[in-house]
Length: 160
Image (cartoon, rainbow, N blue to C red; front, side, top):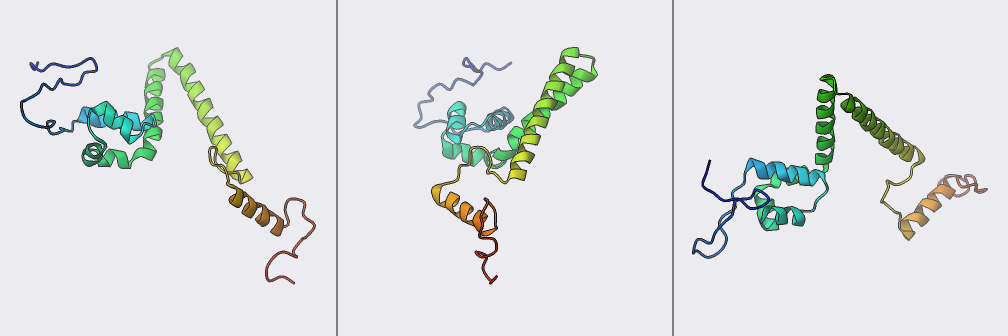
């Protein structure tokens, strides 16, 4: 083992060296895995940099490739969780079978909700239309003959 001291969270303790400024950041695979996990949990760059004891520019400089894949990390985490639960279920763990059933049910519900939302043409959850966007959408609905309008094709351009 090394003679290096570690703090409560397993990070090496950096004692002052007598030189100005912080020592240069050393990227490690452990930090890369930590970043991937925190991205999967939806953490911001600022929170992640605080967890690594570095600045946001340093985070972006050394971990650009991990940050670039931010949007897919949650899916990767969920896939990894499924893989681990399936391995346990294959080994005969009854609790893992139950957990797998719940995970599959939750995944199916999310998929059905997304399909229903797409079929209804509604914006995704969290995306609210502004006043102008709503007015434009309402105008398109009326022009297409929707919303119980009696205008028919009278409002469509080019049709007389």
